[in-house]
Image 1: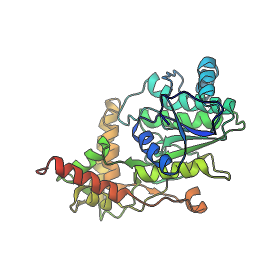
Image 2: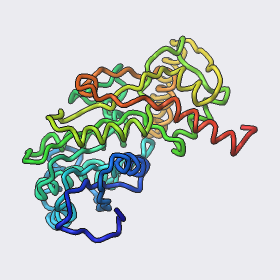
Image 3: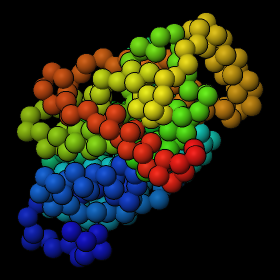
Image 4: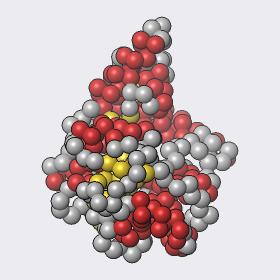
Length: 330
């Protein structure tokens, strides 16, 4: 369906997607098309939020009557709505725009989905909300460490605090999602092919680095699932270790560094970054993930038998091959 085409109220129920022009949203288009799903693409309203707690976000959402009515009208007849919109700025600073996009918008969409009679609302959040803890899971425990992860955690908290109505709300915590043309992935490929490529110890730690293909397949599965789905689900692990990722992305073996050296370096780096207003928290977190990874606890996907096929090695290999074509010397 053309995103600019008029909405026919008499048409069959469709799925609505916000953020279709973004990295995940554009990939989601291909996945839904391959499943024969008719999609209505909606532009997300630009919002700002001054609140830093769930109650405040709910109060701000409650006064957006015109925006809610407009969005509910656009959702009329939709069976499912997926929110892939937001500001993906892991290294950014806190701002009303960041909180508006990542915390206030999900609540507004959920309220509009209720008003429009939508069956299920799927909101794409980030596993970054659980921060530096040793493992990721589907619990309500969060430990955000940056402005971006705090805004995502605030969105989750606000959705959990709002009064549930007929529309089922599911939040998917996406992990470290990679795509062949994503700038984050291209940076990873450059690092993996350089002398900086390294892991802590033997490099056998599991990593949540994942593929956009697996995420979109999982999102479509969650959205179409006939039974109950928990309010928070974690994108399943694709089976990669930190060394696997660097080999696939760089085509070479990474260096092995002493774990104590890596821990001490990160501790010092975060201390300096904190003094500078968290300026380097984003790059340091990427370094931490490259060295130590982060394991994932099995969740709903594993229990329901809904784990998508792993594609992360292929995505990283494709990105490396594409870079070599553009820059053979690199």
